Amino acid sequence: MSSVIYNPITSISFRIGDDIDTCYNKLMDDGYDYIEGDIRWTCGGKFCAIGIKNFSRFNGPPITNIIGTISKVREPNEITQDGCRYKMIIDNEMNGDINRGSCQAYLYLYYTTDYCNKSPIKDLIYATYKHKKSSNQEVVQNSERSEKKFDLDLCAGLSENYGYIYIIRL
Image 1 (spheres, rainbow, N blue to C red):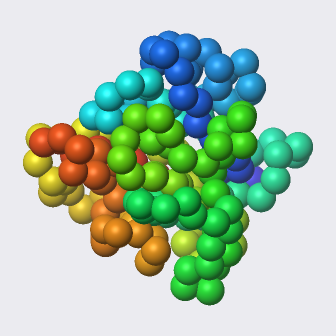
Image 2 (tube, rainbow, N blue to C red):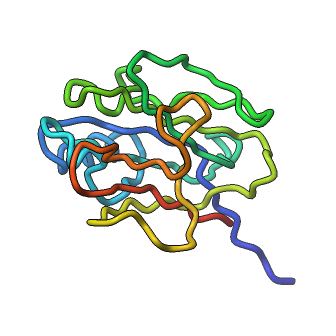
């Protein structure tokens, strides 16, 4: 009998710090594996890294989707989109604004463990480009509440670069 490797992401967070290594270390101290890259690269000010935890019997159901909201106002901790309930991704200080203290717009990421016709996520990759992405790979999308639509650009017009979080599914 063959075994199937099933190791989806079950927890996600981020850390903001004075340098990227500080962010990585804070995430690792809290039991997260970090996603390589400063997702606030073009915002100026502090750095920010995303951390994930993969399945263990202690940390909950698989995450099936992630969406983002760029807004001029604070957003709620939970939103509903396409019949799925999404919870705001927060840091260790209960902050959900990834751009906290650096940019004009608020930037929030939300996750769901609802099925939503999507298979569980097993990994995330952050990448920046000089031009809008042109691959057929899945990236985090803007929520219906966001000022922007379609692919979530984490640089959000703050520079000439474009930043995306790629979703890798099981």
